[in-house]
Image (tube, rainbow, N blue to C red; front, side, top):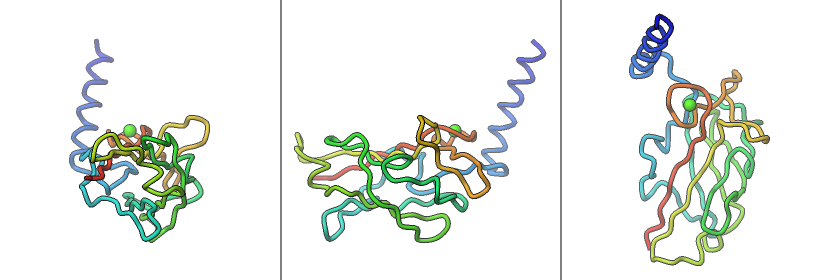
Length: 158
Ligand SMILES: [Ca+2]
């Protein structure tokens, strides 16, 4: 009983602290994980029809842990683990560019709209996880604790 009360107060305390952002974890700031579905203009098709998504983290990232196709990738109707390339805009900001074109990744389309996701790993499935420069594991699911995958949905309005 004593233990469960202590655990409950710790959870409450942590929730309070997270709400105050006083001990915020290493997480994705944009696209905001709280949105679940990114804004319609949250990605672009570039001049060569590849998908580009800009991701901003809460603190400088250990870039060696960000591996396209392994710890960051797209889940699309035709490719469950679509890789590409990662370009660093600054220490907290990257641009992911898909290797395949949007046309390939999003077809055939069964409706005029198309949907795909971006995953950034905080849970290690053998290929590592994304970490901050200090070694903190990504709080991908933004629950205030390191670990958990970031999954953001994107929409192509047909
Ligand atoms: Ca987490």
